[in-house]
Amino acid sequence: MKLLKLLLAAVVAWILGLASIAAILYFSNDGVDFTVTDLSGFGTLAIVVSALLMVFLYLPSLHWLKRRRGGVRPRLDFLLLPGLFCNIPLFIFLLALINRKMVLSEALGFIVTFLIIGSVFGLGFTLAQHESR
Image (cartoon, rainbow, N blue to C red; front, side):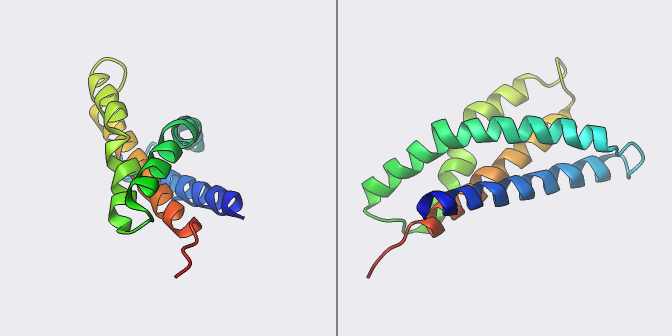
């Protein structure tokens, strides 16, 4: 059951991440150059990278924090860990690519997207853990 809840948390995080990508792409050029091809390209890249991050970085970090704290309280820590702290190397990498492989708006769009995906997944992790009192 926990696995299904974690999978649901991942799907919700991806949906919100794709919504942020769509909003950024649409509002960055006032909707002029908004195409499904751009959305599918950025979206596919974000989903694949975030799936790898969830399996190899977010989940181990969240389980470590849960063991260290003896539970999933306070929830804010579980939002900040995957959303902000686990993504710091990725943020630095994306910022290093500015004016080399991508423009500033693309890098900031990816940073916001991974911030949202990580935070929502961290919240989903806390909701998936059943605490009996």
